[in-house]
Length: 72
Image (cartoon, rainbow, N blue to C red; front, side, top):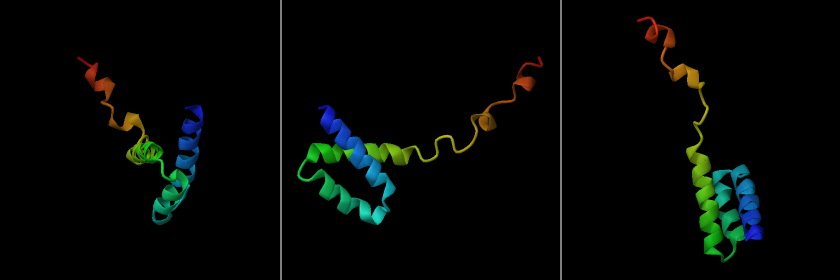
């Protein structure tokens, strides 16, 4: 199983570096006929794309001004 996990991570890392147009062909070649491997890599890619805005702005920018909250 560790080898499969290493394969997932390697394929994911290479796929992320590719332009979107080249990614599908690479994944078909790299995952071969292993649908479980392809699903695992697709899940990693989806999670990565979902994190695109993570830490895009400082968390403090959205925090309330505690000075006004404590001035009761």
